[in-house]
Length: 133
Image 1 (spheres, rainbow, N blue to C red):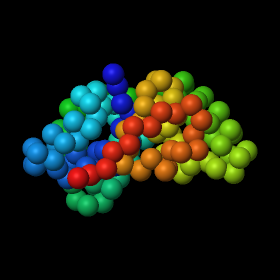
Image 2 (cartoon, helix red, strand yellow):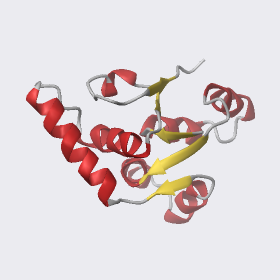
Image 3 (cartoon, helix red, strand yellow):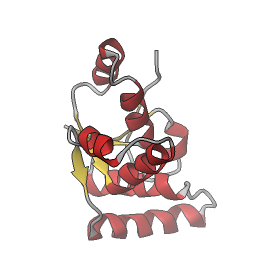
Image 4 (cartoon, rainbow, N blue to C red):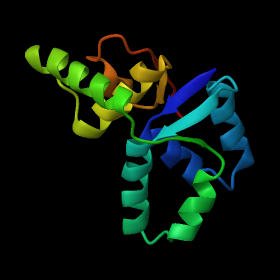
């Protein structure tokens, strides 16, 4: 099984990368699924990390442990459909979250997040939520 990683997942893994017990807890919550990092999640995390002074080499090493999902036509089409459907209801999620959701819907995979409310309005999306202990 694959889970699409929201940016909160990368933030938590980065914060706890030197704390095996905390990482084990996150892995347990993901039920051993493979984490897929869409381009938008990578961009959103990298933007913040670079701002905080994390080097590009450290980021590339960090991403080496994940399956990375590049931008593709299927995700773009899904994004446009989801935006139109949610915008008509006045509930379009923020830009990065909708791209993450579109990646998940396009792959027919749940999105793993600590912020399930950000994805609540997205039709056809399965959300796997977690809280930090």
